[in-house]
Length: 138
Image (cartoon, rainbow, N blue to C red; front, side):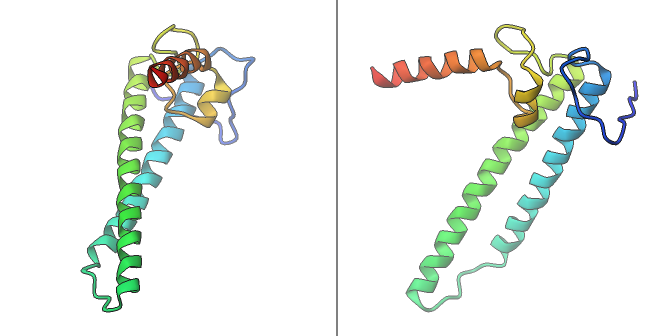
């Protein structure tokens, strides 16, 4: 089913949660984010492949090494994000997007706007973080 998104559409609390237009809004938001990350990754790939390190000066060389390490970390983060976006898009397809994996409750529009790949409601997320802290403190 194709849903056309009004150009200035923003999800609001007073419409049905995850109605077709809302779902389409988040689907497009996720796809745009994914495209941006891929473009960015291509950029870092290009600059990484330019580079055998030709710097003779040791500080230049160290700086190039540091830049490269940072780029690799950034690419790694982008790869992880893209895989989370892909998982979110699967949830969009199967109708579970926007609902907490643990409680089945709506995750909430403000949280999804801020973090479209969220899988837990704020309450469930906080519970997780508390459990993590308890485990860490043992």
